[in-house]
Image (cartoon, rainbow, N blue to C red; front, side, top):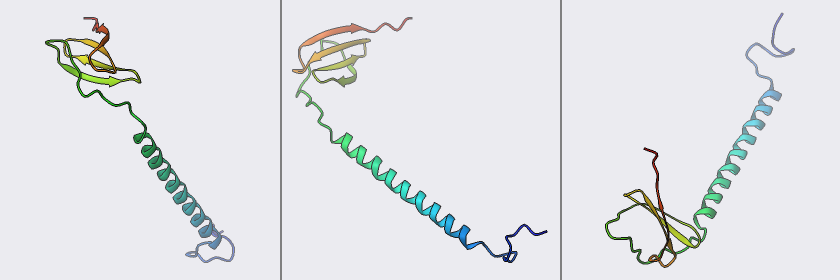
Length: 105
């Protein structure tokens, strides 16, 4: 008993199967293109978002060096090498808060 559909030779391929596979491959390609365009659009939108301007100059306390920096809408935070977080106002000079980092050692 043969495993091939009736009326087909051993090396022939069912044309309906070929059409089905072509449809699947075309659909997958379309979905991938739409997904890629969506990712690129989201990146462009995110990177063009309004970011609050940085002050021209920030004044750190004497003897401190900046290690990391982040900002919020109305403040800047600087992590210093002596394990402190200094939170500045938007003017870049007024220290609003100072937090000592506890490493638990």
